[in-house]
Length: 67
Image (cartoon, rainbow, N blue to C red; front, side, top):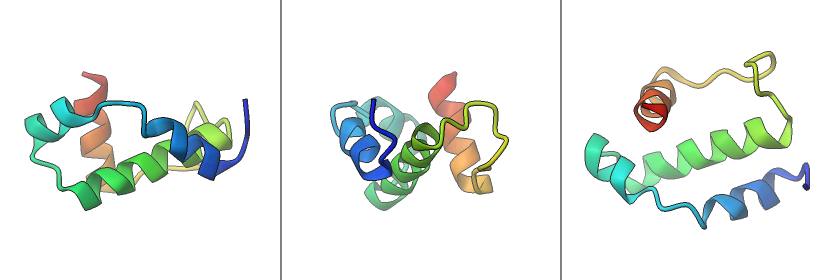
């Protein structure tokens, strides 16, 4: 698996975020921010929030995503 954030972001294009968008009312721009954050976390293997923390807005979307 690549550690390249751009490659990680491209992989997220295969994920259907439509249900999350419908449930939360997130805009396309906001979903892009969320995907960029996920790509950075994955690229840096920051699975335990040791390096990167989301903005409060992205954190709200993250919680909706995992629940």
